[in-house]
Length: 508
Image (cartoon, rainbow, N blue to C red; front, side, top):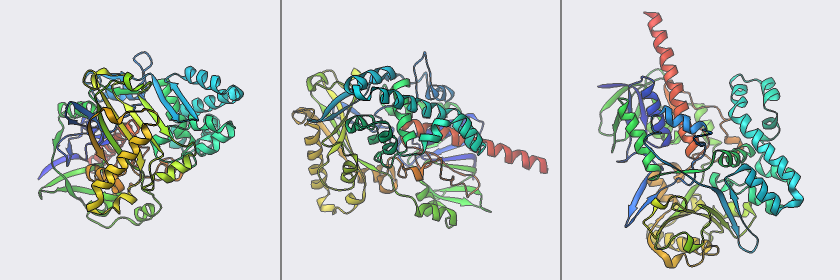
């Protein structure tokens, strides 16, 4: 029987960063992946002349060389900064609601203020105060809040996190309506809710504030060659550090002894002895199917109060024209027929024609992302899987392409004649996500990103010694949060293994 210190299940973002971190911490690590390539959502695929990015729209937290932020430091520690090239985007997003609003926000804190105050002069002072709140909440979230949490100190929270205390755990809808009276302005600054999959009435203001501030200050980025390039780089760093990986391989069971991880059993029947398991797979899958014992009562109770997060309907398009020929003026465009985000959210849970979606053009800032004279474009409409699971097998293809046609109709309200330029097309539904990601409901962000499911409130699922979870299921979804979750989880696991070794040595 082979022996490892750590077995990492799944090579999504968190699985990869966890594996590299554990191996670099001196822990003999095995990475197990059921697919034949690393990355999970951070992958690409080829159709005709195009290599399509699967999921990354904007990478946050990198910062510039002159003003680096946390992800640049993390990537340096993981040994991948010299293995990848980043492309800076110069606009946050364009929000286009036909006959109501069409505005593009730059990736600049002062630029955002200028644009908003030009469009809404009567709200000028409120815009200043709102942006100050976003800045303070974001800074406190990254600096003083973790210390207050660690010490479980109300005194530290009140002293060093006054803005987070006032705004952080309230909903974005509540805070935005406290600052502003103009509903169009509210719709503009709340547009990033599309990334989280829950409407402003359910989204933590701190989550929205951090997204706006971090993207504006530290800029949105993409990765040359797509997110697959980062996944490959992380795997290369892991192997260079002495780690071992097995593709086309699944963990069948996690074997425990005395409420502690003992080993994992692979699908081929072989058993790997280990001291810790870090799962990038969902805790629902792990506790209900992979653990060799019934789920602890606390975990069962936790799951009863959870709600599955959103999935997505995605159209990957290779176009025979340039972004300029389509009048695309930003890499990301949010498109809607309404400013009522509650209506949009209800629409996400139905088969009604989509009323909101987004378009990402990857070669707007990176010409190499598509062949010369062409464009790589992705259309996204967030959806929950429930309605798709009820579609009969014989109706699936017809339903999928009918919905795709309707999403293109929506996008063509802003980018006319998109359809006539299509050269390559691939369509993914929530059922595709379920099959490809092996997540319940095809969830792309784990559990719903609501206040009550925030990692600030929920306790960690640490009821089995040596069993850890990393990824969107334990923190906020998205690329930066999952990369960071993998690193933090692996560091915690390594520290616990060191403590156990010290205790065992002291007994000798």
